[in-house]
Length: 235
Image 1 (spheres, rainbow, N blue to C red):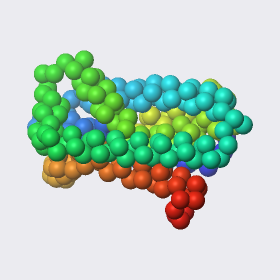
Image 2 (image 1 turned 135 degrees about the vertical axis):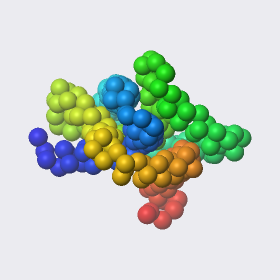
Image 3 (image 1 turned 90 degrees about the vertical axis):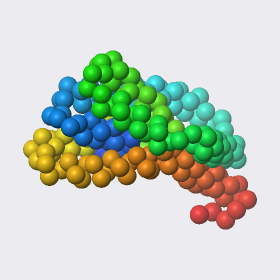
Image 4 (image 1 turned 180 degrees about the horizontal axis):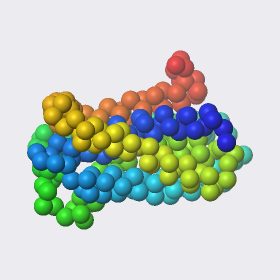
């Protein structure tokens, strides 16, 4: 197996590990006033890892089927127009999220999420639901994950290896949260103030990513397509 492939997938997985669902919500779970409930944290992390794994398989199967059916049927111009449409679609999505953000208090929503996380009486089913909700909301920002799926789809490896690597990717995504959990257990008093500061920053900035991530990615994709079509100077 190509070592470069492993390194690339690992880097993408670590980028994905800094998302709201894979890091920020686990941090809130770690900021419990008493001893961290290990079962709650592991339930949450395994649920969101499994969610990403299943979504990855579905997308990878679809991508492989699409590649097989379109190879040799689309010329470069048609491909560029398709790329342009994807970029514009992401920009429209960013605008939608921005308008939606203006019409409600995102801080209140973040507080509600943290309150739900902090509720020790919440059931395992409720915690799993929160993990799935976080995963669904992040589907619009799965750029690294989609890149990894694209790499796996076009790599000259068997399906069993692809699925194994996808499972490993999902597990690597939750490694930083597990490392923070271990640190929280070992040096509770020292790490808690740092986690609290990070949590406050998250409460202020978490919704911004739903706007700027699809906006930036959409712009780059659309601009690249426009450059290929000769409408603008390529980057």
